[in-house]
Image (tube, rainbow, N blue to C red):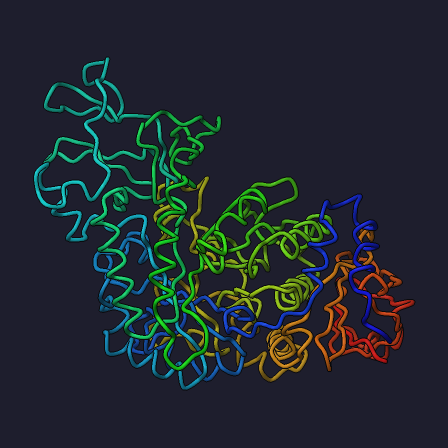
Length: 612
């Protein structure tokens, strides 16, 4: 076995892949080269926790910070490097915490600042970093900033939000959303729609003006063109950095700025669930000015040294883009860095041809996976962040499952998540196979999107149900007779306790994958190269080895039929054909010895080590 002449052989791989991808030999070589940078966040597993739904410690039916602290042993045993906690700040809970009324405190339903400090200290003892959700685009309309801003046109915070007089109403008060302004009847200044249904403009009588809101009307957008807003938000971030957080996930970060001309946006041709014409948000998301803010934010965050941990504090960005070229812009440049980890949602949340989807039963699309993974590994200028699940989308169990092989398909998703050369972002419950429990009656809906949009839009409650810990009462989440959302009806079999006792469970599969990722030098730091690039049924790649380690191959059969593959490793500079199985979900794969002929049963995953 030899691992030399990598550059020459990468060129051959580039020629092989040319019909599907346009990656250059230099890009392929860079992706296939093992890393020598051990900065913690460049190899991390980040675990998102929706605090209302993780663990209730005081019996009120709502999860809290002390509940998270109680479960740190579990998180450490799972192998996560950091937890991202969805908003825990004081909030009227219109959008369940994403409408913040105080950036520098803890909502009483989740605990106290002392509880938070205890969580950070305890997590440190468990070798887990704590990251927070920072919602910088908007506040709650109950935030003191907005209350003052809305009180008059002359107060000190009058221009902390986006206010506008509107435009004259030609119907003299008969038009939808018409109001009597200082100079007569007016309507909103343009056709911008809210992402959460209806017009993006709301009238305030005390100012006799409209304010802009990209999301709910109770979430007014901040005016980031005002330097005072930037200073106040950065000061709030420093408040938490000073308390030891390892960084932030930046919610809706692309929406910080709006086109100051307030021109109409093109319409999508669709009506939202409320019947309002949708605009396409090209003038309200992704404006160039956002990058200026991110550069300054990155500089501020980089000024902190992570006490007790090597490396920097981290900025994760909630980024939904249509292609990799757009995604790469959010890394910035070496001279002017922006986000360390923009979320790559192209792999897990887009169907082939583009377009975000949270639909259920989205079939595995091998061509899409291979294409987006190759672009992720070769074209992004920094560490990729791969994600398949979060609090805003139906769970991957349902989106990719076929109703028959769901458990095996969940293993495929986990295998790709943890074995590609990327940081892995997962969501509570994905490791045990929690599914989406969408309400069937409007009276059971808690998410305002579902309340106002029912039945066309049923909301996001289904992916936010409480964590399932045990097969007993309330799944071990709470002692309360009623929880804020009902426990999933599959909790008796899909839970941590039951799966911990089963060596063949999805939980054990995830634990093993994460352990291999952490402890095997090749999986931790190795490069990556797609193999067998024209195979229509099986996704395969090799993780190239650092010195003193051995390469690994990963193959997943994305079909319901057995598939026989013949893997040629020479494009990665590997002449050996001998392998030893490290992990497989079918016993027939445990005795493999060669890459020349491997038969994968339906929807199976394989990780094997190349032998001398």
